[in-house]
Image (cartoon, rainbow, N blue to C red; front, side, top):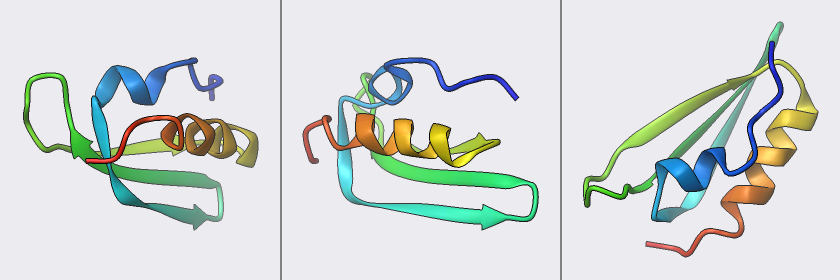
Amino acid sequence: MAEVKVNMVSNMFSSVNDSVTVYRFENGWMVEISGRDHFDEWPTKKIVCSDLKNVLTILEEYSKIKLS
């Protein structure tokens, strides 16, 4: 699976909720993030990752976005 692109989360959200959920599966990970997008909608996005490094990259970027 490809590496997570830089600014992936900030491209999806203008602000994020105060919680994020990380799921661990036998063959990978999933990060679930909710917040306000650039169109003033409130989506929930599920991002599938193949390894923990990508999960940490997503969480680091999530932590830099302002809270909703």
